[in-house]
Image 1 (spheres, rainbow, N blue to C red):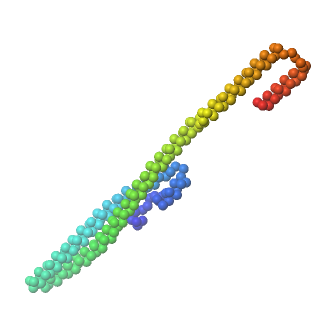
Image 2: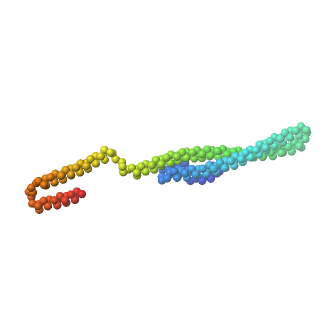
Image 3: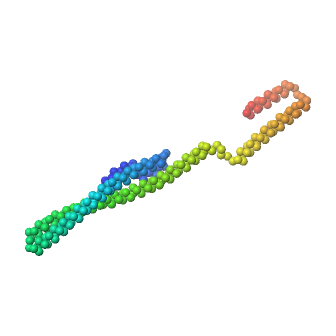
Length: 219
């Protein structure tokens, strides 16, 4: 059909799926295809109407020429019956002329009608392609929306994902450590008020500094 209609799209159904696999925005690519296909449909419909009108005109001229040829043949018969051979020859001469025109218009009509049939098939194909790709567009729009919502959910709630039992277990461990620390300090205060120093103050200060350095390393 390239002889009848100029292709306006650089994407065909055969290559659309391959390009969709590499497209960052498949919906935009599909929209470009749909727009180009719609332009082809409009162009094909316009050409179809023109060809149909032209084919109907050729058919009318073909049938009219055939009727004229039959009419001249009847006139030739009438002239012969009347003994007018000269008039019969003139009528037959005109009959041949109309018969020739009828054959010419018939051939033109058959060629045009074949193109009309081809255009009808092209239109069916284009409309079928358009509908199939439009349905695919609806699927990709839904798929992209699902992905967008999933990304929003991950951004908003991703940091909150966790099992409650694990969260409370960590909290229990922290509170337990705090309780042990408080209990140890309380016992130290109690023992400090009653114990009698057995070592030298220098040794105590030395061990205290060692403990401080150990705590600093542990953070």
